[in-house]
Image 1 (cartoon, rainbow, N blue to C red):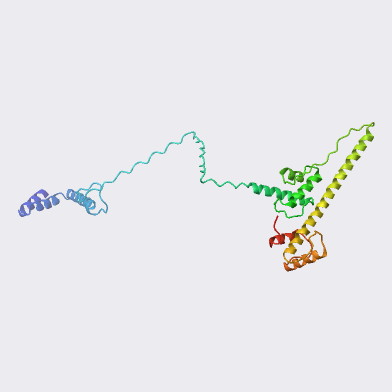
Image 2 (tube, rainbow, N blue to C red):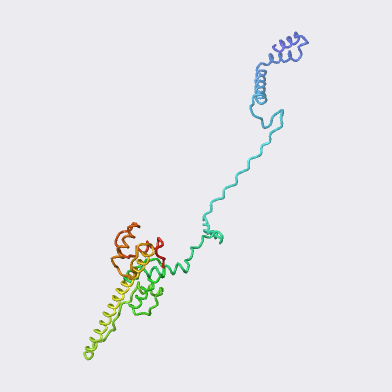
Length: 291
């Protein structure tokens, strides 16, 4: 009967409606099937609309391509890590040699002392040892003057060695390390005991005489140097206008007065003696020529 009513509606429908009228008829004829089709159509419409108009990014495979596809390079796979070995081999330590300095960049060698410097050092050491022994009272300046030669000669005479008056390394070593006098070992013998005692007494007497000779030589040297100092100072005082005084090497009253006048004029301590400091000052002002 429904079919008949449909056919009657179909018959009653105007002929101009065509497809729309036929679709309406089908909906009314089978509403359940038509509702399902309607849901499917709406779903398909939503999917197509979403895919074509509602996506913010570029679809990997669009239905309608409106712009050239952007090719993306595939990410390179990371190299697989080497599997840890059961036994790790220790690499040997390699020592890298340091670069050598070329002769142009090498540090300069220390300057070598000249022969004159070596001689001056030797003379200074000998002068210092002679002054310690009381044989030299001049300036310790490393210069080989007449005072130094006279002091060396006095020491050589007292030591019983050849007199040269020349500073040598052997002389300096002998002054710094004097050899003790060793008496000969005399075996104890009852038959020769008296002779041994006599020989020891003779050796002791010779040593006492040697010591006395050295002391006398030192005293003579001191007196000689003192007289020489006074002669030098007396001659200088006469030349620079503090005379006239007699140049005799004696510490006379007129010589002492002239020295004091000179010391007063030059701001020196007033002692009135011909000392080494006075001679150095006279040398500094040109009153005495250096030796």
